[in-house]
Image (cartoon, rainbow, N blue to C red):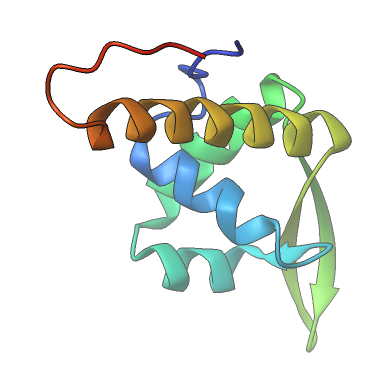
Length: 104
């Protein structure tokens, strides 16, 4: 059974990666607003995920200003799916009636 990924598990990173599943790429300012975090917090989280190969980051222009675009990599998609599967397994354990001890 795949386990929880400690790199993805912090709430801001999990929310960031989850948000990126809905788009090919997202603009930095859009992600910042959606997550309700500061530029520095978001930059730090993106850097950690880029370092692991879970997200990619590129600079570009949007409406005449420089911006950063962020997207999930194939490795990131796979890691997130495995992390979510591990969370579901934990939820299943919690939802079992007391006294049952069945494992998959």
